Length: 154
Image (cartoon, rainbow, N blue to C red):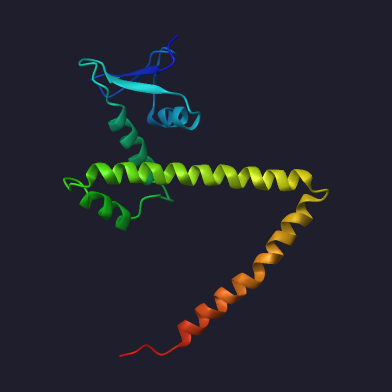
């Protein structure tokens, strides 16, 4: 067994998982991603690596759902970088940004888990954390409402 799972795409557009010896769907490709299983999608005839295009199909399918990640504005920004001299840089920037975001998410989760694990009453600790945020939110709301009620300059 290899460390990279091979999925073959047949001319009829079907995806065949060679490890489990059956056809799979784009949703099952998504599940492989979520399970952090390394895979490669190959065109059956040419043996060309088409993993990227299959992942784009999975993303397109997910974006059709009710809660997309990519806004129209974000997609417009991304499209403007195609053919631009900065195209390679923006790709790397987005990748590093998402990695940083994921690292911060993991750190926050670990800190919260550590705090809750040490607390005798974890729900009271969460309430205490929320109570500390209330004055900040009140201040933000007050400022927002104050700016909302100001007459607009001509």
